[in-house]
Length: 398
Image (cartoon, rainbow, N blue to C red; front, side, top):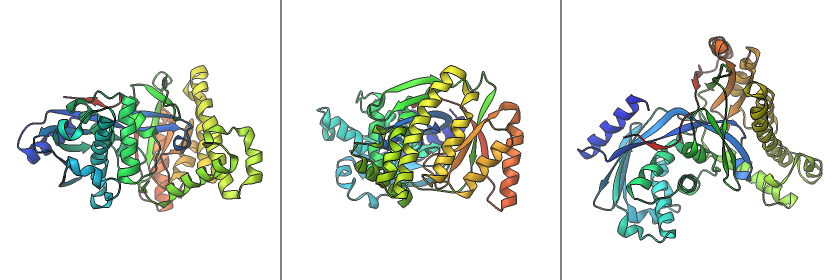
């Protein structure tokens, strides 16, 4: 854990409450190595948790209220726990957006407790939560799932819910979908809860079966470079929802529950039945599912240097078929490849955010310089470029 983030969360909690927290919990952001927009189509994804984390200092209170505050918005938001059901989802706009994430998790966990036969109004104590984070916001590294994962881990422990990691991830997804209004899948929350050091999470988003797969970056002398374009995006805005609607429309046309149920062999028939835009959205998801399977198989058989062409093909599909890239992302990807990257692609929901490049350790400075110079020449805002390493999921830190 970043000591500065830990200290900031403690200090903010002390300022808010005038006493020490019960404990500190944290959860990571994530990079999706491959498998974009497949999660809400019941498909396959392959993310890993990163060594940038959100920390929450948490402590109980005896008045049945929940109060949240963060270093990036130091105006506390406070509501009665019993009012959460009225707020979400119908009146979510009354809550500032960042606070909907932790409050939404509390709401979802109370519902899960009721489903398990626990009288939430009688047994779940009030709580104060103070957040600090070093996960870059708006870079496509799922700073939101880091908040949700840290909140879920803290409340699960303090409230004694005894929920497993998958149930906590499901609560985080419900918070994001209904309390925030972002129609995302469960990949980000599963990565934040299940991540392990030096490994990726191969996740079947239908069954929620998760397989920990060794990445082998370090033995291969490879680094994963994140190139944050600083073009901000928001999942709760229209582009993401339109893509999801197109996927649902395509599945309905093909008579399947989800695009996961199609294979590459089904694409010629799909093209005959659909308009061009819907078909290209479908083609991206179907081929991306296959790329995830191919990437996991290739990693196990040949190691990480052999997956570069799959990363490249994934970016082309997101750029041309799903149309979620932007010029800054394309420039970062193309420049990194030209400078010697093994492979590169945009990562995250799209419409901004970051690209990733798998790079020989010795080439990191050269690739970094090449991308920075290309952005300057194009007149783009200077990118933020840094390496990330596979890390542990949500945990109690103190």
